[in-house]
Amino acid sequence: MKLENRTILITGGTSGIGLELARQLLPRGNTVIITGRDPDKLDATRQALAGVHTVQSDVSDPAAIVALHAKVLTRFPALDTLVNNAGIMRNLNLNQERGLDDVTREIDINLSGPVRMAQQFLPHLKTRAGALIVNVSSGLAFVPLPISPVYCATKAALHSFTQSLRVQLEGTSVTVVELAPPAVETPLFRGGEFANEMQNQKGMDVAVLARHAIAGIEAGKLEIRPGLSNVLKLMSRIAPEFMLAQMTKMGARRT
Image 1: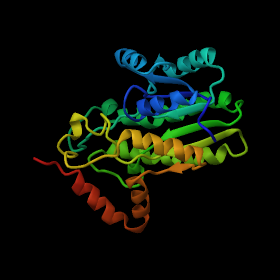
Image 2: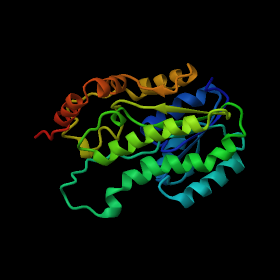
Image 3: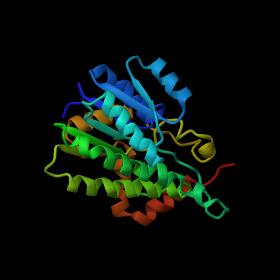
Image 4: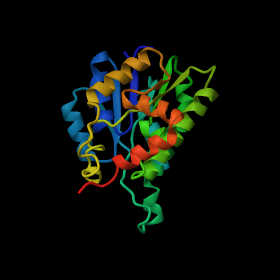
């Protein structure tokens, strides 16, 4: 499968992995559409990446997904690739009081978003030859980082969902791929909530990650686990308790 001359929709494309995928896919003759919630970031991305198309949308809002579907297919009826990349990662101490709507924000965006996007766009994608869905999970789908309990749970669930979706779509024109990145040098990884815990950790360069993703898809891989993500999956089977202890230590707050 070549990622050339395709029409690609990337959610959460104004920063990090989504932005870098857009940057690397545009020169390959692809039509690339990105979504995001912040109109200022969308404007900045459109100025930085010549040829990219932007649509303001929020994957946590079912009505916004329906509107996005109508808008994208009207303007880009050749859409054949969906990259479910939008996500947030938070440092949550569940011993502290937190509103019930707030504590599930990551579920709304990281899990409900891709599930709803896939469901909404599948009827169209099944009409396109060589269609593709890429769900961006995480190496933390295999071993959790306890300081981010809800994030890790959403990525484990997305990993499971992707496996089931792949099985259910056998015999259709749609290929389902999971990209499980390791820690990547992005605003999410270096965000203020993790400044102390991650200060001595080094992530994969985002350009390298995007190259791994594209090469893996073109090589026909259905589960792409660059760098430490592959180690996490292997060790989650061999020594799960040891790996959980190591991740707990890594996330311990440094002063």
